[in-house]
Image 1 (cartoon, rainbow, N blue to C red):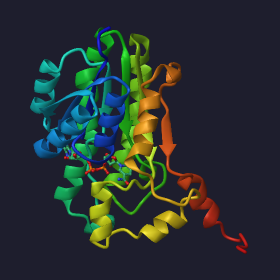
Image 2 (image 1 turned 90 degrees about the horizontal axis):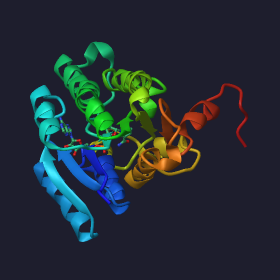
Image 3 (image 1 turned 180 degrees about the vertical axis):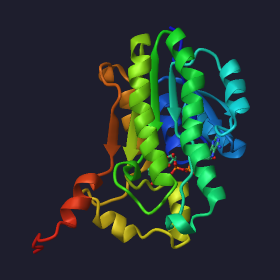
Length: 256
Ligand SMILES: NC(=O)c1ccc[n+]([C@@H]2O[C@H](COP(=O)([O-])OP(=O)(O)OC[C@H]3O[C@@H](n4cnc5c(N)ncnc54)[C@H](O)[C@@H]3O)[C@@H](O)[C@H]2O)c1
């Protein structure tokens, strides 16, 4: 039996690393693609230590040539998981640095777009498969992160568009909308005093931040035959945050 090849962008850290480990544990041959070679090598080492198959490939999702180059040499992949992305700090539109605004869009939205564009046809020709994009609860409700929130809303929209476009060719396209996930990126914002974990936990009915593995499990499900008729959805994995944030702030609710 030939091994299913899955390509995980952003696989050097956080959600991408957990996803690479999860898919490899399920038997996929995983391509860990990232701009960070050191972190990517560490992910590959962990997969090999667990008896899995993986290799690292350098990829800058914001660079069209880099995406095209990897698409030309990565082979007949069946799953593309777009985890490469960056966070940003809270800001007001008029105070936001335009360079940072453009970087967020170039990596989060345009990077996802470029990868979907490069691999959609390859997956179809390989016999069909899945694309999973990483949106956010910040793409479901507005956060004071003026480039990030709209970029995630755009990813949710792109996911629906591609599901309709690529479905007839056997490619399912879904997104995950993670809640607050304790990754290296979020931990750095917490350490810098840019995020308050007690607020994040209080808004989350299940009472804790997500772990990268929580998101990876959802991605594994979406790429499995158990999700054979699921396409075009944005699946929240947020510990109930989307329900809780409006429930807990409802004007008039008496708290005991
Ligand atoms: N952590 C959270 O709370 C949270 C919540 C919702 C959504 N997300 C999203 O999940 C995704 C992953 O975030 P994370 O928290 O795991 O962050 P992370 O920093 O731990 O991992 C992101 C990875 O993307 C890579 N990357 C960044 N720019 C790249 C580029 N141009 N080309 C290739 N790789 C690049 C980084 O090197 C890193 O390995 C992002 O899209 C983020 O917006 C995170």
